[in-house]
Image (cartoon, rainbow, N blue to C red; front, side, top):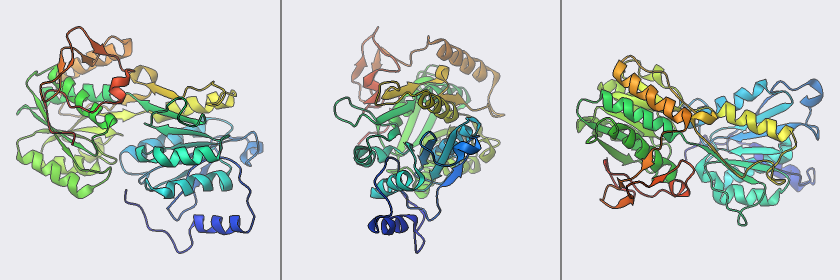
Length: 399
């Protein structure tokens, strides 16, 4: 991932010097950084007694692969971190624009050693293996919660947990709205990498659209990385040139896709956070995270004495709309009443737990049967976590 250049004397250089001089002893937990600024701190409503890094203080560190104001993935996590200001006894620190390299290991160690963080949230997918796993083994008393990773019992350190939301539920609804709005029957999806979480969003978006118009298609373009603005703009323009009139995405920052589509006069579905300000005419709705809810629940569990190590906190934490992990953006001005009606009906079914997105008969886009009639994958199915296929109706390949 791209990141900001280091200053002439970075935090990690200072830390290394202190460590070499014996000023620090190995304690426990967190990330590593490449940005020149010192991680920002937030008292989180803590009392004066808790404002110093005491043994009882809960210090939660957050690491983002991009900037905090990217209108996307990193902004959503930053907003979730900011929501912890309402939780008494919690101090938060964070660092942005940390690449998925060994630099994140240094950020984690620095947060643990210097800032006394005892809980870490390295939020980017590529942080998990080997970076989180390596640092977690070095600091067994620190808890590492990774967004999107898969904890494997007996293989991964017990102080590592994984959390993620079923945001594909919101992509399913976004697909419903897209199908109602499209006049060409051609949808577009700009995606970063063909990993399970991304494929699941592409597939759920398409299945939602096909629940309204069974012959509608979704053209997918993979850019190859989480933030490649030039390729994202090229993909969006190419889609418009092909007659695609509704475009959504799964990249770190949807800003380029949304703004490019708005300039070209086509409709968009948002992702990660609310982007309606970027496309006041063409924005339909979007799939958003509600990380404040998730991070607040983690903080409360830890304050109650629950940990990954003692079994009080599950190593795999997942949730959807009904669990407060995700939410739907407000509808834009172009959304019809019919689209709203069908979208709200699907939303109500998700809240009630009666809507199954993946059910048979279901084929991939090469004609292979994935699910026979009468069979289904519930949201927690391991097959969805390991998805490596595209459903019928998606134009594109995973490799």
